[in-house]
Length: 327
Image 1 (spheres, rainbow, N blue to C red):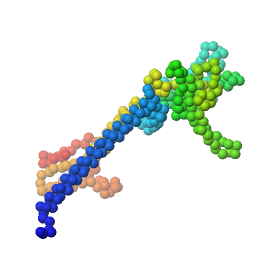
Image 2 (tube, rainbow, N blue to C red):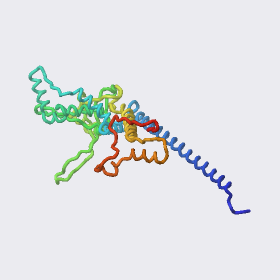
Image 3 (cartoon, rainbow, N blue to C red):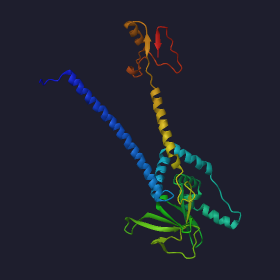
């Protein structure tokens, strides 16, 4: 038997190898599609888990992820940001002023309204605009009040949404909050001038919760009775303890529209360059003559020499004889 391979055998071997390559590519495509489907199912399953952990609403971890995503969309995506800002501008316009009819009460109100620290947090026009943004993006605002016992002066601040880990409600009425559980890292400066940090956890009472007996601690956590909290929430369902970001519902649409605009931009870039086909009758001499007519010296001269064939202006007309076709 001869050791030489014939052309027929090589062709047969090549056909077998090509078939295996095509099959391998097909398997890779199928595997990629299956993996994408599994990843999508896994993502959906995770969101279902986040919902089930909270029984009837998103878990606190789920809300944290939604809030982080909404903040990124507000900062990065112009569509999401525009929607939030239009609403803030419509609501607050050039600002508001408040006044009590009773002179004595109006004096107290104006003192609260004009307090420099309160203006930074709430009462100035800029602060009101920023609070509207916070409300649309996080959909939860926790105002905390600091009254001064000596004269009743009140200053207001807000607790970060990510620091509120739980809302403890009346066992007999889930819509009546009692305490807001806050977990945070307190930063300060020690006596030696070094930066110090410590983890803290405490309960803040709801501003309407005024029990006859004030507990010093709840589940081992200190209760901050001198700092009541007023919670504002939007989004979600009426029986949910936390609100859900307004941006969350528009994220898919904003992303889809962003991709659509990118596709339009790609199409416009493709349209910005044209390739022309010019057909003319005649042999090599005729083709050389037509090429000379279409030639340009702009690229070679760098714009400094004389241009033999300047580009046409917008709306120019190409006039040709019947033997020439320009496409």
